[in-house]
Length: 59
Picture (cartoon, rainbow, N blue to C red):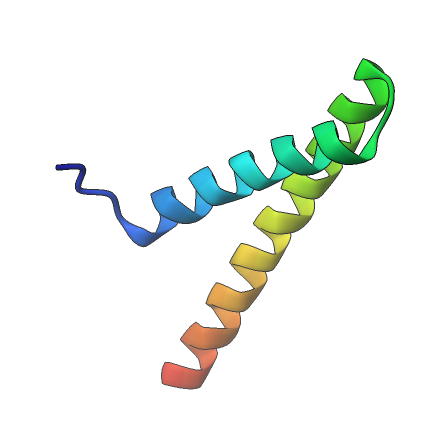
């Protein structure tokens, strides 16, 4: 069985969700790649932003 930490699972989710969003929403390969990277960046920003917010709340 895999033993992944929370960050690894979040990273995997961001990658898979970004690929799916890029493939489903855009028409050309270039648009898909750019939108997938854009979504991945926002997923990572949200991940770090929320984690720092939780860190501040819990002290």
